Amino acid sequence: MNLTEFWHMGGYALYVWSSFGVTAAFMVGELVLLRRQRKETLDRLRRIRDIET
Image 1 (tube, rainbow, N blue to C red):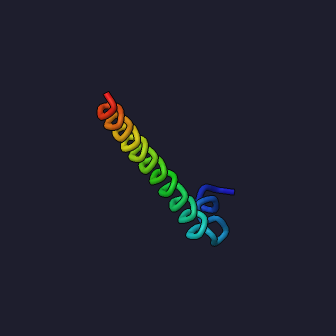
Image 2 (image 1 turned 180 degrees about the vertical axis):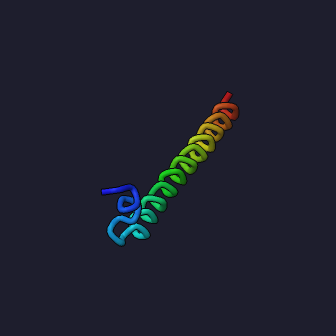
Image 3 (image 1 turned 90 degrees about the horizontal axis):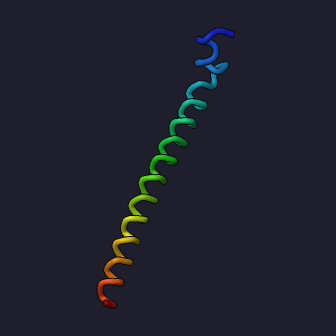
């Protein structure tokens, strides 16, 4: 098997590589959303703490 055959994936390259790409994009998006949600939660907790003191 040579490199060209590997990238071609027996005719399924478009499906295989686009699946990898979409999965990677969703994983990166999930990380971005989790970081944003964590920051918002910490900000909210700080505001609650400041109101109570």
